[in-house]
Image (tube, rainbow, N blue to C red; front, side, top):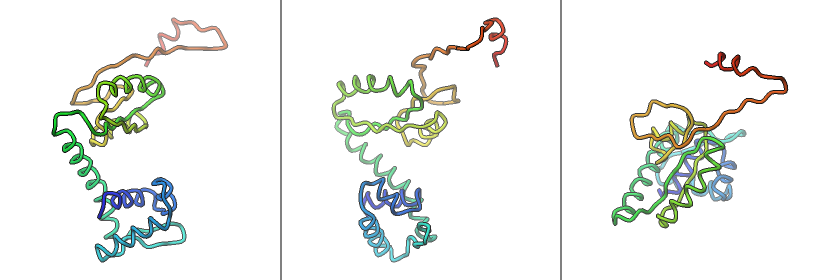
Length: 182
C-alpha cells in the first residue's frame, strides 16, 4: 500500500463516510472507492461494508485503519530523519496552536524562523490547549503553543502574559473584585 492509501484509511475511519473523506482529500468518491478496492484486493479481505448511512468497518478493516495512525507516524518520522541527515534543517515542522492571541503572534515568529530555515515547511494544527497538550504528548506535533499550566516533564517556556481587563456597565469596586479571586 502507498502512503496515500494509509491516509485514506485513517480518514475513512475518522469520518465513516466516503464523501467526507473524498472532500477532505480534495478528490472524488470514485477515486476513493477505486483505491479501497485495490487495498481490499492486496490484502484479500473486505475492509468496509457500505450501508445507507455510510460505511462500516470489518474487523480486518478496523485493524488496518487503526494501524494507519502508526504507519503514517512512522513514515513521517523516517522522512524527517532522512531529510535531516545532512545536518541541514529541512522538513515539515508540525505546530499545535491553542488560542486567538497565539494565532495573531505566530505568523511573525514563523516568518523569522523561515528566513533562517528556508527548507522548513509548516503544518499548523489548531485546537484547545488540552488537545494541543495531547498532540505534543503523543508526538503528533513537534511544538505546541498552549494556555495554562500543564504538568510537562520536558522543556517549556512562558512566551508572554495576556492582560485581563474587566468591563462593566455598572461601577465596579476593585477591592471587591480582588477578594473574589479563586
